[in-house]
Length: 306
Image (cartoon, rainbow, N blue to C red; front, side, top):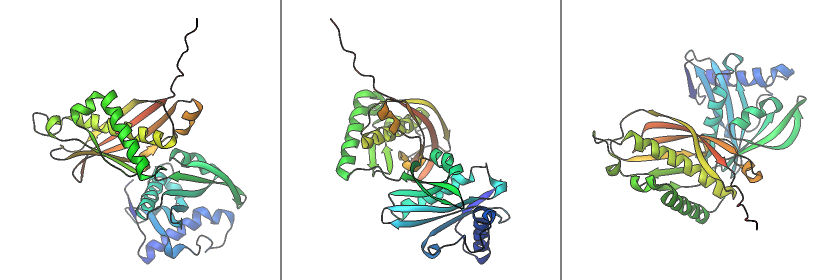
């Protein structure tokens, strides 16, 4: 299925956008036309996914609740497009827009049947909300930035660098460094010279290692922000090489590219996190890495009896 993510702009697009909202979210409960809109339409961010013929496949809206919080509302996927992943595409597009407009977290009210979908996208379950049309709803939330001050983030990065140097010697041979970390995105860099292949481009093994260590680093930084400890292990990974890396190697991962809750680690449970890392040559993406990391709770030290 060919599709395109757009912002509605023409009269026909707006009509299709609101029609899908009404058809999915209001008509089944005999609500009147117009009930699919509210007083915040003019100031909200709107996105829609259309097919090659212009048919509307999915819609969603985002607005600021306060300076730090954005709310997703009116998410709907056409019946014919369900199960195709377009709901997740729409949700991520709205989350990316939330980052652009300066929000630190996203909230939404999910009906009972959608809670599992949002959990898979990294949302935490909050308080039960008032039922709508007799359907139970739950507030859910997702952090776009890790909690912590700039000074705390700097100390976490220093701890990560030290851990790399002491525990993963490969990082020193590669001369891997943290380029930036703002609580939302981690970007790492390495010089090309020590990582070249005979073709004078970056060795594929170095690209893979840079991606792995960047993903590992993002898990580490989240654990620091949450006050958690554990052993991080790469369980499974795959990488797609899109073009040779010829000049300025870097890797980046952000919180929107993560799935998996780390908080059960505090209860001594093993946790998993799936993430995507983009490998860049300057401003151009040249590879994409997907990794599944497992964090094992630290085992208590065994005492010695007499």
